[in-house]
Length: 302
Ligand code: NAP
Image (cartoon, rainbow, N blue to C red; front, side, top):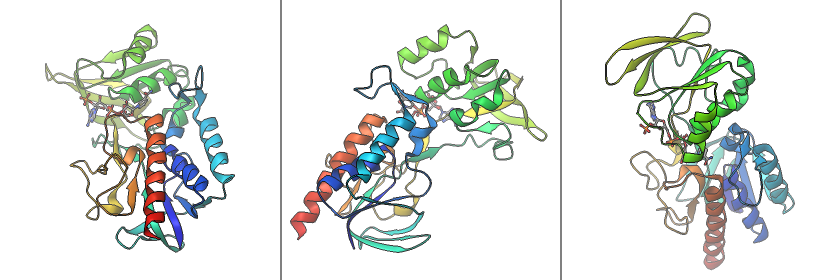
């Protein structure tokens, strides 16, 4: 039995691991894919304090991982398939684990547009990761869908490769932060198609165009492009705990200020939680708080 099992090795889970290791809790971090999580879909983190001019997300994660590994925290790349929050039992594709406390740091995954052609062309022009796929579209015309910070950052990244980048957004204004909107406007390769929604992704073997509909005029138009990048937000990875702990209407985990969930001894942090500000810095802060709360819970129970 471990003192603590942390599910997810993004910035939240890694920071929880760092604090748990320093508390000398016997700790296991389980990650289904690669250490780092969704942060690795971004090239540079510009707003993590202490890194003047930013730091690459790879470097930041590598440093975090080294800090945790130095503390004898165990890592395993295994996919969690079952969680009993009450008994604190977990089953992965390889083994069963029990713990005195759990920290859920499972993050979130990209939301789908759910339009015709989307599923069919994933990997053939439809992408949810500009950092991974932008180099494939050097000097090509691409579109990117959404209106938040992610769309703004990724459009700027795409513009370093593509011939042109059209941002398609369903409102008149992007909700991205002002500094990013200013950079978008200054970039000659970037255009906006506003008040419009994508209704279909068109192609044969690969993407050739998108069909859009203007929300005011109802006019439809076909925009030629070789890739469609979709950045319309995220949904939490909370299916395994649904029905066991309290979630909000969009399935984000509800915690208190100690990152305690509705189930005693189960804490949560990072993008899987309901909150106002989804940032690396807030994920890390929550990871630290969750580990501190888990430490108190475990030691007070002894
Ligand atoms: P977001 O802020 O939730 O924005 C999602 C965008 O997609 C919104 O503009 C939304 O439109 C649009 N959208 C949602 N569903 C749609 C649909 N079905 N069809 C068309 N458009 C749709 O998501 P995000 O940009 O991925 O960012 C997630 C969080 O991470 C945010 O809190 C963000 O601030 C943070 N983040 C921060 C940074 C940074 O600080 N540098 C970078 C990336 C992400 P509406 O506007 O109409 O709702």
